[in-house]
Structure formats: structure tokens, C-alpha cells
Length: 464
Ligand code: AMP
Ligand code: ZN
Image (tube, rainbow, N blue to C red; front, side):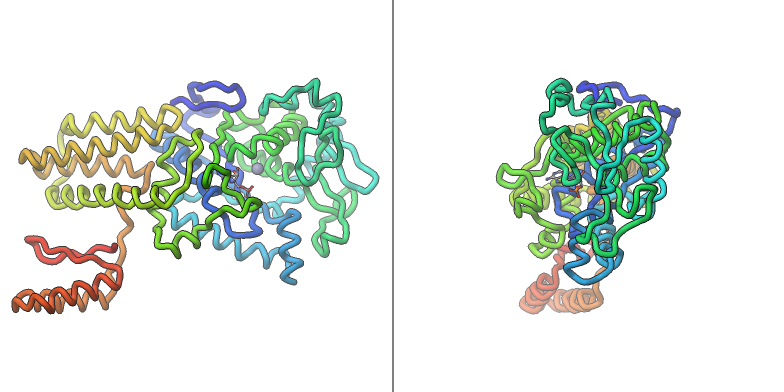
């Protein structure tokens, strides 16, 4: 399996530290607002990564942090006159609901920053012991970038330029032009009642220290993979490396993966530009989670992806083709089990699928393999060779693929009682050859969001 490692700027053969296991840290949301689908591009890329590792047989331990204290969350809580935890609760809950809508497999740990302050303080103390941190007059603590020789190795910064005092970071906690960044921020009145005691006085942690402390707590001082969107690479991930390696003297992370941005009309989708959609926005416009997931995974993660409603429409029709074949194969398979060897027309696309994902998560090629399998299956049907065993093999291959893609089989939706009743009336009308009634009932069913199709086995209902 090969991944493009941002640290070395090379595609490398992946080797885990412990055979058969992978520790994966994925930077999570700041819970001050609803996440936008640009954020979800990152979380879906990480989901594909996680599921690909599992497909290859690894046991994955994934950690995703929740940033529930920073300037934005504190400002939001104050403005709404509620406690910080009350304010962030709503966005944490909606984040987890959104993960479900998008079929994202849950991580093993979702540590919240506010629940790991002692770990962060302990890490800052280690930085003091190693002479890498200093306290400023206002009680904040800064990391001394000039004292960490390897600073800049991830983002490939020009260290000489940096040391001579060029501003290299615009993180909101930064103190001054030399690029030193805050690991602990002293309390001021804008923080209201949000503060923790520390050896340096009242305050709160910087954003970067949170990820160094929580990743090492759950995954150890050296672990396999760390990911995020490309904007996280600098300064956030660079600073995480400085803090972790500065404190432990050990390599922090072996492989760094960063996804390119989701764009709207050529620009990064972001809250500051105001050009973003939340999942709620899209659902109101009639998009469903499966289609959005499809659009977000259809591009290779290192390529920028442009979000359009045409792409959602294309996903809708692509998935209808998939649904058609799943229905056909299920009918043909009946109760048959996939015994014996798979037909070559099933094996080849499944192999291509695995190979595509093993090559730095090439999802466009993996989807092409899915369509090859479906095309082969449809050809077998036309030539009369899609017997129950072949169909059962095809279905098993689709299940394997769906372990990673999670868009092939649509979640079973219960048929509402109202729709069932109308369908029963329609069946009666058809029996009595009352075609006008039958058409009217079809329209009523359609208005409720369901399609009815007449097949030799009777009516078939499916959500639109
Ligand atoms: P934030 O809440 O801004 O820290 O972002 C959470 C995650 O979403 C990070 O991994 C970001 O890099 C990622 N992200 C933010 N905007 C985008 C975007 N437009 N496209 C892809 N990833 C993004
Ligand atoms: Zn992070």
C-alpha cells in the first residue's frame, strides 16, 4: 500500500509500526458552528483512508479531537449568554449526526480539548524542562521556534529566512514576528469565566498543544498516520511536531497525509469567505447524504474538488444505476450463497478496486472498477449467464467494495404506512383495471417521495 507522505513529499510504501495495527490521528472540528461540507471532504477522505486500511486487514485506532475551547467558541458562548459547554454541546451533537448522515465510520476516540487540560499542562512542563518554552510578561507561554532545529520540516520552510525574523505564522495566538506560538494563553477579560489554573497562572491552552497532547495520550509518542486538510499543514501540524518531538526527542508521526480543498467556484469553501454549505443547507435543497458522500469521495483526495449541484445530479443518476444492478443481482441470487470460484468478470474488477485504493487512495479508479463490475454483470444478464451463483459472487464483491465506499447499498428505509396504504389501493385499482385511479395513486405516492414500479412480481416501492 502506498501513500503520499507530506513529510518526505514522496509516495511511499506504507509500513505500520506494529504489524497489523495502525494508529491514526485526524484533526477534528472546532465546535463553534455547524461544520461545512469542505470540512466533510476532509472527514470523508479520512474515512476512506480508515476503511482502506481495514480492507487491507489492519486494525485501526483512530482519534479525532473536538476543539471545544478557543477564541471562537468563547465568543459564541458569551454572545449567547450560555456556558461554554452548553454552547459547544449543540455543535458537537450536530457534528455526530452529520457523520451518521454521511456514512462515516466512527473513530475509536473523540477527545474534547476541555477534558484534557492536565495532559496539555504536563506537556508544556516538559517543554520548559527542555528549554523550549518561555513565559511572557502577561503570563502566556510561548514555544521558542528558534530552539527547535527541525522546525519547518513538514511545511518545508526556509529556516534561515525564518530565523532572521520573517513572519511565518498568522495563527491567532501568535505573539510576535519571530513565529513563536502560544502553547498557553493567559486569561483576559474577553475570556469571561473560561479559564484553568496552571503553573503559569490562569489561562487556557493554545490550539496546537491540544493535538500534540491528545494524540500522544491515545496513540503513543510515535504513531503511524496523521491527517488533515492542506491548510492544517502549516502552522498547525508543524507546531504539533515541534511540541511533540521537542518534548519527547522521538519521531512524532511517520506518515502525514493532507487532502486538498473543496472549492466553490474555484475558491476554498470556508466560513470566512462565506461561500459554504452545511449539510443542513444541502438537505434542504433535496440532496441526500449518500449523494453528498459520493460527490466528496469521487475525487482523489490530493486533487482540489469543485462542489456543484451538477455533480450532485450526476451522483444521483450514477447511484440509480448502482441500485438497478443491486436489485437485479439480488433477484437473480435469491438465497444462493457465493460458493466455489468467483467468475473472472467479478474477480478482475475487485482486484482493480483494491489496487486503486492501495495506490494513494485512488477513488476515481476504484469507482471505475465498481462500474466495470456492474457493466460486466449487466452483460452477463443480457447473455443469459447471470445465474444465482454468479449473482451471489457479484453481490459479495459489491459488499467488499462497499466496506470502503459505503455508497453501493442504500440504507434500508422503512416504507411509511401511508405509502403502503396507497400502494395497496393502487394494486386493487390495477386489478380492477381502473387505470385512472391507478395513475392518481401513483402521483399521490410520488408526492410523498416514493416511486412505484410495476414488475412481474408486483409493485415495487423505492424512495426517490
Ligand atoms: P477547522 O474546523 O477549520 O479546523 O477544520 C476542520 C478540518 O476541515 C481540517 O482538517 C481542515 O483542514 C478541513 N477543511 C477546512 N476547510 C476545508 C475545505 N474547504 N476543503 C477540505 N478540507 C477543509
Ligand atoms: Zn489538530
